[in-house]
Amino acid sequence: MKLRMSVVRSLFCAFVMAGSQTAFAQSTISATPIADRYRVNATRLIAAALADSAAYNRLARLTDTFGHRFSGSASLEAAIDWILAEMKRDGLQNVRGEKVMVPRWVRGNESAVLVSPRRYRLHMLGLGRSVGTPRAGITAPVLVVGSFDEFARRQSEAKGKIVLFDAPFTSYGETVAYRGRAASTAARAGAVAALIRSIASNSMQNPHTGAMSYDTTVARIPAAALSVEDAMMLHRMSDRGEKIVVTLKMEAKTLPDVPSRNVVAEIRGSEKPDEFVVIGGHIDSWDVGTGAMDDAGGSVAAWEAVRLIKDLGLKPRRTIRVVLWTNEENGTRGAHAYRDMHASELDKHVLAMESDAGVFKPLGYRVTGPDSAVAIARDIASLLAGIGATRVEAGGPEVDVGPLVERGVPAASPIVDGTRYFWYHHSEKDTIDKLNPREMAECVAVMAVLAYIVADMPGTLGRVTPAAGR
Ligand SMILES: [Zn+2]
Image 1 (cartoon, rainbow, N blue to C red):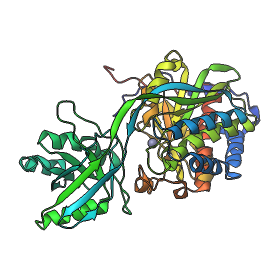
Image 2 (image 1 turned 120 degrees about the horizontal axis):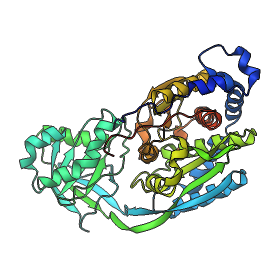
Image 3 (image 1 turned 180 degrees about the horizontal axis):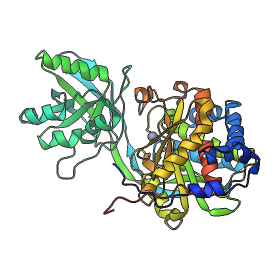
Image 4 (image 1 turned 90 degrees about the horizontal axis):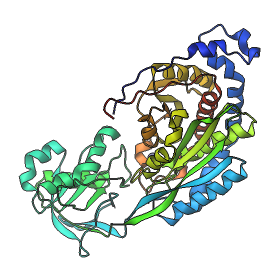
């Protein structure tokens, strides 16, 4: 989605004129008024973030103690209870869980066994929201295609078969369409189940789950991901003309919604407490691995950023609110509930920042907002030269802040080195050992500096102009 943006308020003049920290004014003849004003406090925040491995240690405690945090699970709610207690111990204000009803999809036992041309247990994970199979499973010949285009040409062969979409990974944004649409595409041609090559940029036999969806006009058939290796093997067998038969068994089912919570805590603003900078991640994960990367890391980094601002005694003019959204992965109910519960405050939300790309080496910020917001972020990012995080790009928001952007709130997210993210994403391999204490500390610094400065600076980032017709 591309958002149409326009500058509603251009506030550079406000920054130049407001010079309460005159100590730095004499070094200010450049076009970086914000950077100069906040250089000392930014340096303190960066030093504090890099001083130890507090963020990584907190992430380790969270993921080691509670494991995954899938919507509807006891482990998610236990993790939220612990975080709320820890936030209170940290001395954050207005610590609370805001109730959200979330879907409860249960995986159950599952397997995919190749029965011809040889017997072999395939590496598989059912896709989130999929229906299950009959108890005896579905045993059927497999039609292997490499793309939706190839399937369109060969759909007359699909009736009564399991269709495997073995599409190579290009980008997540492009290839994820197979996870979303494989089942209904195959069902429309009479297929009885759908398999996909995992949406992954590298693989060590780890299948990757994630949300799929059904087109309501066709039958709901079960859908699962195979490891890249196994999908490619079936494709080679197919190319050789071998008869492929698979037995798919899945107990997956959707139970009634259950309550969960968005985690909210604040540092109240010293002058404008009813204006907000929101900073966060999503506290839920998939039901495999521990979701250390996606997105416990982003959640803890945001939380630690706010704790450091408080512990350094910084008192921003506006309120900084950490929000850990629930149910990003299979419903985004937390993001929509936050928007609805705080609807009357949204015109006073000056920035919403989410980290949801892994707390890898940070490189800068992606900003959703008017040109003036990008320019201010570039100015602020110059303060991160010491950790190499000065890149600023205009771009779309992370998922949980999307509903806020639609109401005009500017958004930001750390740009990180994404090389390894889709090796582990939504798989058993998403565990904390894939992350690095120093890189995570740098992510804390990047989030703390932007949140603090935007919460304290005289002007705002302006507003996002909602797309026409929304
Ligand atoms: Zn995520």
